[in-house]
Image (cartoon, rainbow, N blue to C red; front, side):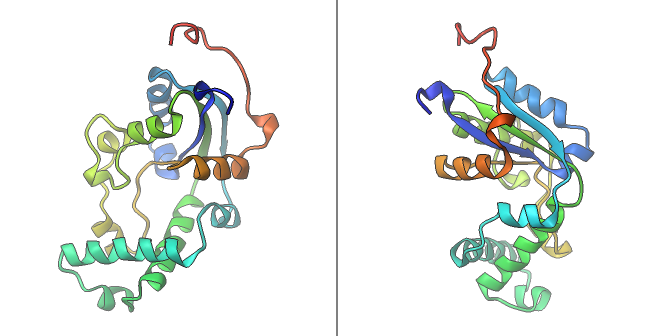
Length: 195
């Protein structure tokens, strides 16, 4: 990135977003914000591709397991009874598998987005990761009511419509993982001189 206007991030419209016919609305929200779509493709990912997308380190798994444990505790459910363990890394492994299964269950739309503060803007437009906590006016707040308690009970991933890179490092890794250089385009939008 040589200029802040050129910050890039990855957005994945997950299978539930595609199957519910929300692709157009999601992309419209991005473009109306003044962000530029510079790469776009629909595809059906294999479990191996999705496996390579998500971190494999124990710290990441532990954090996921801790969030799951917090959800169980908050609603008075017994994690040991339902999942057969209270070990946060083991639970993180389970959740990671649920995510892989979910992401490989249908078509995904992958999008490269460019613009000032693109990473933060796309995360803001997407809303909180847990749809039940996302504010109205965000993608997740407007189109999903899923909740980790329901997902945990069903032993599945939370259906939250989109994935958006969280940091510059994550965006850099994910963009290289999902897109080759020839699949990302440079062009000028009509309002580039105004924005």
